[in-house]
Image 1 (cartoon, rainbow, N blue to C red):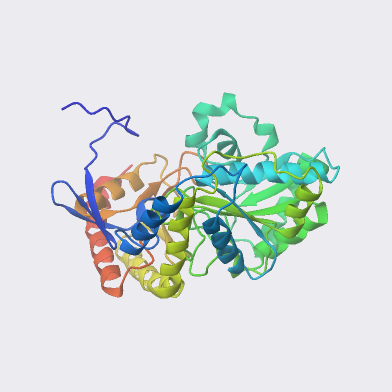
Image 2 (cartoon, rainbow, N blue to C red):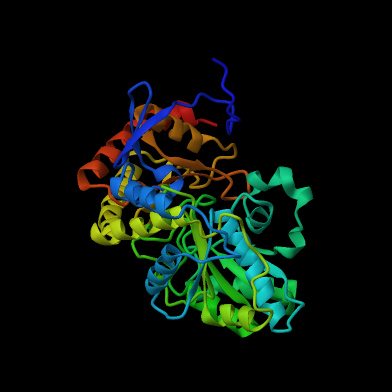
Length: 436
């Protein structure tokens, strides 16, 4: 039978039929350990009945209202609980359906914030290269990920999105962050509305962590120049990096915190942002309305899923488990590095971890990308799902693999994951395979 599905690429896709904990099962009966939680989404694992029950109950009571006409009880409860997780008070939750929408919302909110205060010259958004902030045109323009942007460059206004270099482990945090000042001065600091950064870099440069002091200096620079600091925690938030919010691993307070994937953990589309009292107040005391919105923003069933996910995170102590199992997994990755020299680095925080691949003789990326894809294919064949990528060095070179199993993973399952990854490395990282 010919499928009517518009697939993401030309390849064979197994049909997933069931999920349970850290495992997925296909129609042929094969079991896969979901070592990437899809795309670091399924934070509480698959098949959680309590979340499904909460969604069903909400759908029976109130399935939809439009945000321009009503709020809802579940929206009010969820926003309050989410805001209470922050260590600083007064933040407001803006809801939408996905990370790209959330970044678009943050970009527009930063622009409107300055306009409401009479600073209408500010519209530029500084981001980093590489970075990934989403697939919609605005979010893609904000991203510094060459392969995903190249085809659509004619549709973007790149002048509005200046880029600074990615974090550099060879520099101390203060020195590294001060490279932002050079970009601001080149762009004209009076024209810059915001700086957006992933506290821990995700898909574009697997689990790259800046040095101590980096975000404290970023915050100082932003404050000095009147620029909003936006933390993109679509991937790293909600316990993934071993703390509820990754940015709390630095002494920094973002003006806008963007969230996504882990909010509803794959059970429903849910994302959004938390805006500081100053940002929210400027908009509401100015024109009285955020000039932006989506039809499904604040969808009651998605919010019910999000509330149930919060229950699971708290009851099962998943933030703590992410730290503990993440330390176990990272130690195992370092052991693999000793066995397979093409694994140049193992890094990350919590259960947001990355492997950097390349030439063991030079310690640099191979000239021709593709090794990460081969490793990921070998892992999939062995029954392990990973998240490969390339282009971290110059938009083309630089292979890496992102690992992020559900935060529910047990010590035994981490050992199983490492065993499958070791077999995949043996399959893919031989001298004949990687020879250039």
